[in-house]
Length: 144
Image 1 (cartoon, rainbow, N blue to C red):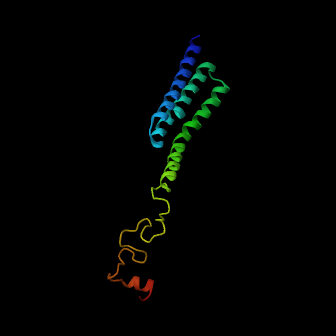
Image 2: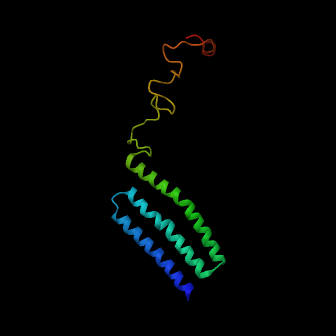
Image 3: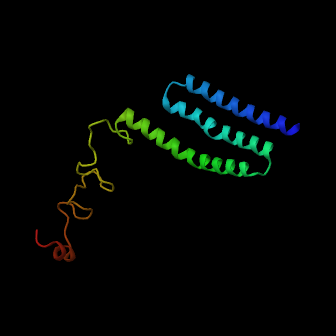
């Protein structure tokens, strides 16, 4: 009798969690805010359902399978959230880094990682126009 009541309470909490998440999805203004309300439905509700199964069944093969599925769901949740946010960003901005569509910043000189303003390819640090070359530089690069 007690097992059934505890199981029913855990499953009712799972249903309430999903219902509250659904209300939050409807109320929030943008996709970024809505994604916060998906997390309880994707993580908390399955934990409550797994606990309900554990209380109802005890240690059983079904409980083991449920726990295994729960572990995979909890492990995948952050990756799915990140991929969803990235897809939203690509749809809105054209690029996940926030560049507008059609703006190609990767092929412009000076936009490679590590380059500073005025440090164009061929002008490496310590080899700026007007800098004196050492003898090692002269032999490695040849005459200018």
